[in-house]
Image 1 (cartoon, rainbow, N blue to C red):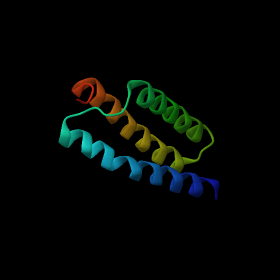
Image 2 (image 1 turned 45 degrees about the vertical axis):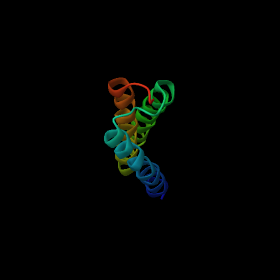
Image 3 (image 1 turned 135 degrees about the vertical axis):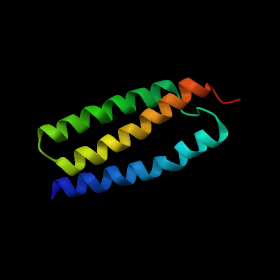
Image 4 (image 1 turned 45 degrees about the horizontal axis):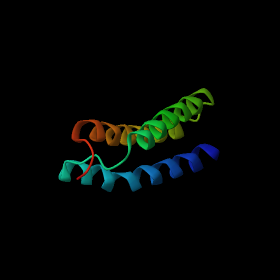
Amino acid sequence: MSDLILTICSIAFGYALVPQVIYGFRKKMGTVTLQTSGVTCGGLYTISGVYVYEELWFAAVACALTATLWLILLLQRLYYGRPG
């Protein structure tokens, strides 16, 4: 049951990030700070690793996908630079 709940939460968090990622590509801007995206990305990949260790496979994949969206935001900031 916990795998399902964690998976649903991770999918919801990832879903919330999709418009931000699309916005960054359309506007050619990295609008999220490096510290925010870097720490969140690293933390989510770490949590995903813990889920793998605990054999919560769906939650691990969903969390890794959300971490990848944060990685895209980090790369947008590095590639496009600051807004304005």
